Image (tube, rainbow, N blue to C red; front, top):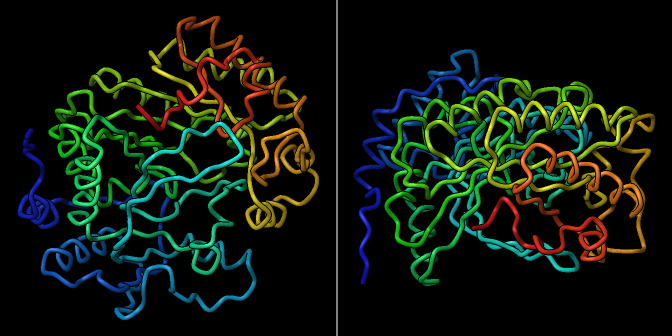
Length: 387
């Protein structure tokens, strides 16, 4: 049997004691809550204290008997609760941090994902996570302190599969937004680099990837970015790093040898969308060699869309473009019309091929009919989140 020199509990303990947290850009929590499991070992206690030292202005509270998803912020109004949650950092443990997506009714290939973090400090008004069951009651930003146990779950499942398999960090959180605070990438990337089967896929809007540039990743980690044009960022992704900074981070990581992938999702049909997305793709694809691009629009369930409506009102490109479609995918999500989606995707496909003709272009959680119409049916399942 192949053995793996993975980070041991001792290695992770040493990291938690020695790593010097620095504030995550664009995140300034007003309070930090120690929830269940956050300080249950000396190593977790040490890391918790260091995280608090990065935010000396934040009030620190103990709710050591409360699970991470049960923190009550004492606010009834859903929109105000959402805003308060993004100002609150919860340190906790997550005993079931490994999962597998279970999409039905669309072309998603489904994949393994894991959660050393919960939710996201960024301020995207279309966020689908805002309506998920685990977020609606307690929409706080979470760091799970039991990284050793989480990676042990990944290791166990990867060995059970017994062949190379991707594990995705970015489904239920931003994969790198809090990395300056935790330094978790400096444990995770070596773990995946040494593993015979487990491969890491990380999705983020962050521009701070300094922790990963000197690591020996052996090609087992693929770094993925979510991008939109500056006009979309200005109106719908207010609290996120600039597009220029994200592209610069991609360039640095590509130089360090990481495969780079991009998610254009949700594409937002602003009035000048052709010009805006054309300019974005030219800036990206003339500066960075990209391995794969996935395209998608807004596709959310009702609770998340309620938050979007509360934030934006009715007079905006997202709300005006959404409709409940009857021509698939048959998964219960609300999307743009079939015609608009096909038009958006075809333009992106043609623009991408003009700059990087061999680049793999796939659609996220779409119908086979759309993929065939756009001419990318051969790439169904070749998403950023899998091998």
